[in-house]
Length: 225
Image 1: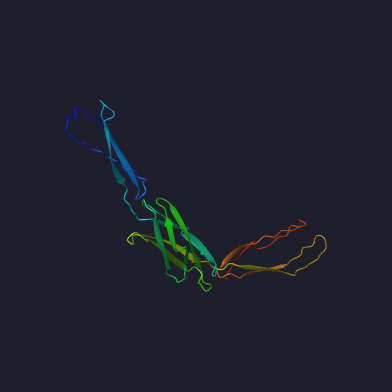
Image 2: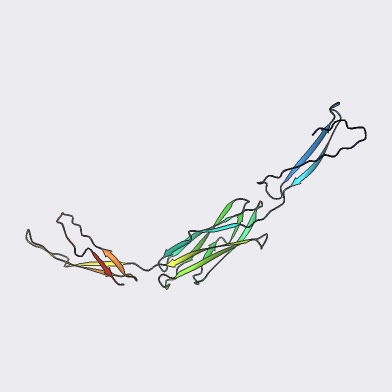
């Protein structure tokens, strides 16, 4: 940055370098000014300018779905969060599409996202398990994101949905009322019905408001649907 002994009418060439920061936004510019001044007479001076420009770099976005797995009863609706990260240096728009292999008609809201550079945006994925879905059936759902500016930039992510078995139990006690002398033992019949769609093991317990120590036997039952 110092030129010495420059003869009258002579020229010197030097290098000017500008380092564009890693976090510079695409399509932004920096105006550079170089000033030359005589060390003998500071009124002898001149300036020149140039522009440094950061080009737009569009990179493959990062796409994820959370959670990766959920289960629910037939007829229930489950939601997932779809997250897109823009790894480029310019604002980008991404179009989202969804598909599945069981035909459960998953939906996305919204179906497009505008994501600033280096930031994340989210959409909601919803899947309603059909009422007639067979228990333990799994649906593999895939979301694809494509850059609206460059269709070659795309990413995909998947999650799973499972139809859970219906679980339900019913209990009845007969007779509903009994009486006896002090020191006598009253017996009742407890009927447990498995109203679900899978075999279940039920733990049984008995409590009393007066502290008369009720006892139930057996303490567990395994019942078919």
